Amino acid sequence: MESFIKTIESYMDAQFPILYIDTMEYDQIESDVMDIAKRFGRGVIRWGQRGMRDYADNSFAKLELTKALDALLGDPKGLANRVLIIEDIHFFIEAPETIARLRELAQRINSGELEDCTAVLVAPLGNIPKELGRYLTIIVPDDLTAAEISRMIVAFAEEQGVDVPQKDLLDQLAMNLKGLSRTEIEQILSLAITNDGVIDAGDLDLVRSQKQQMIKKSGILEMVQVKERMEDIGGLENLKDWLQRKAQVFQNITKAQAFGVDIPKGVLIAGMPGCGKSLTAKAAAKMFGMPLLRMDMGRLMGKYVGESEGNMRRAIQLTEASSPCVLWIDELEKAFAGVKGGGSEVTTRLFGNFLTWMQEKDSLAFVVATANKIDVLPPELLRKGRFDEIFYVDFPNEGEREKIFEIHIKKRRGKDGWQKIKNDRLQSLVERTKGYCGADIEGVVRESIEAAFVSKKEELTTDEILQVISHTSPISETMKEAIEEMGKQYREKNFTPASER
Ligand code: ADP
Image 1 (cartoon, rainbow, N blue to C red):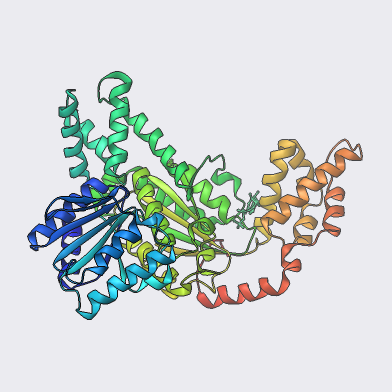
Image 2 (cartoon, protein in one colour):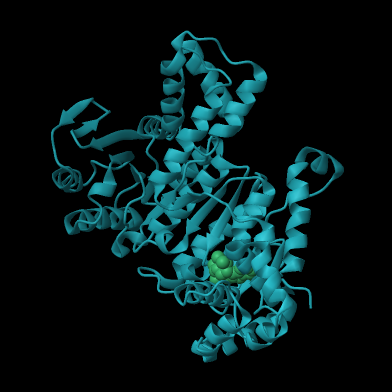
């Protein structure tokens, strides 16, 4: 919290007109701001939905926001040497009458007409209208550290008159509660005590299930149930070997770190559609033995200034709170296309946050980002040191196509079914499917099995499959130009090939 307070102080010192503190912890933040105001020798006026209080004489007026601002702006000196706290601004900030008044306030402060005045908006980040963007500075309170959370748990237990957990359990609880806000932590602790009157090891499960709830409610992250295993992926041997090594590090993280091994950060898997990128992200979580969180870029990108940044921050908090975990960022490129309200500036800032997190994180969250198109990705994202490695997934080669046929035929027709195809003209299948992606091959297998069944065949035959292939258009044909262009870009970038060549 210290750096957060320093940040506010330095902005006040530098006469920034409006600070927007993105929080739901009103009590804590407002008391911090009031302390700061006191240190600056400034009076405090606070507007909340029930009215406005001037702490100089403790007077209270039942005024709605616009009326309150009119009253304050109407008195030329009334706001000098003051901090004006406004709560719940997210409900009002889009209204033209609010915009006009806040802008006027900011302009008066900027011009020096109003001296030593700062408006501090305390609310979850809302949709900041462009007209106000240049006057507002968004400040995000620091996450609670594990030590702060431990202290909170101790204080809470004492207050409730229950036993304070032993050191080990306290540490574990604190680790598991990281990334959550004060209110959220208090809710979970209350629930723990209501359940059985104690805070004990059994409550770790409660913490985890509550966290899952929060993830669901966030609407940005999704907990994915994974069945896929590495054996379900045909080919991509380089990528699989690399992931296997990282999994070994994660599974022995304490020893690895003591040995001096860096905690793996993550991988970017870019490449052709339908070639197993998502499949690999899922199988990686299974191999690491960690839960998989999927971040939907489309949903993360909000329409308004500040909205996507808030979402990104929340996603990072929840990821940290859920670690050890694998964070799968699906269709990374979506973040960089069609952003409304701020265009590329927003995404650059947004990814600034993300890259800093990637760079600095020491939590056990392994990022797997997948992307089909890389031409829209900013170069700094592709620079070495962000991701541990960037892999390029191409259309499967001959050996890989054979493996993919094997996987999908075995899955549906068992070992014997596969043996029959293998002993027949497997090579012709492999040759005839050049330019097919994994998903195309799976489609062919699925369709041939259905065709064999419907035409009352005893078993699946190579002829049946060849028949389906003859009327199938693989993605490399249906999207020929786009695919060729993508191939060119990947070759230029010199990414590490996911397959053995
Ligand atoms: P991408 O994410 O690269 O667009 P996916 O991983 O979603 O592609 O692939 C779609 C489906 O195609 C997978 O669920 C899987 O059934 C099949 N598939 C794709 N590539 C492979 C592969 N290399 N091995 C086995 N199946 C594959």
